Amino acid sequence: MDNTTRSIGDFNEDIATRYLEEHGFKIIERNYYAKKLGEIDIIAHQKGVLHFIEVKSGDTSYDPIYNVTPGKIKKVINSAHYFMKERKLNLPFCIDALIIRKGEVELIENITL
Image (cartoon, rainbow, N blue to C red):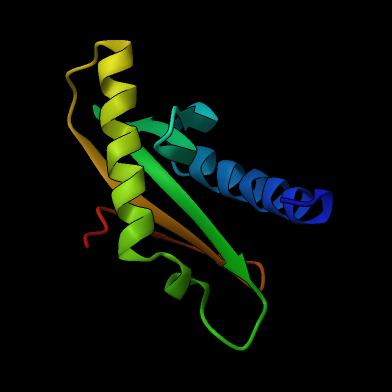
């Protein structure tokens, strides 16, 4: 990933983090990397539930939600299990997508394959 792509990603994750905090989420970690499984953009906690959040954004002609593919969700699920095992946690959790479209934020909780 080049520096421009990383900078854009960091900028959008900052927007996502602020949005989540404003909506009562406590940010646990950003850019968590599970060995050989993948990365989780944001891990947050709200009302006793861990949220593993994939952030997608775009100002292109197609909706960034289409970048939340079944393969990507599967990687996030596997990484979430790794995180839970590594930290010895036994909490309810869900996989979410946070979409940023032209400055507007939409949180889609408990996204499924």
